[in-house]
Image (tube, rainbow, N blue to C red):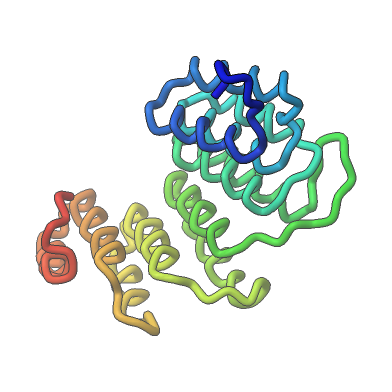
Length: 222
């Protein structure tokens, strides 16, 4: 494309960045970032979201945060992907700090309207809470989904809550939560419970959880 003298635009750059992410090629990703800057595309929200995602997935969280901070405009995808980057790279405290910034309408050097979190936001918030043992905070945000944001928890949210409770050794509460679910628990929920049973060596409950996982997802290697 470049050899034929065709200019890249805000549609082509994200696909190339996605390829860099899939390969984990940080250096190639930085090269594409430089190309985007030269093409004047580095301030486009869609391109910036993919730049930030590429850096986070390739382990360049500092670069990802710099792209995020310098974005002239951010949407909920921008916030979610940065929060997810921290959560998925074992930096849950930064994920929670950024989430609070999102709730406060925080902007670095800019004024802007508050962007409301969505269901995806809360998946990574609950995941971050689980990783740092903030069970009470996880309970708070799980409840706030309904009360403050009119969002009904999905199976992913329940799985994250079971993970948070399970890591803390609250297996009975985790089981109570599963039994209270308004829909049939999926393999991800039972898998979270099974992982907690492994940590706390509860063989009896593990057998029950494993039986459900085998039934719902028999090809699950985990």
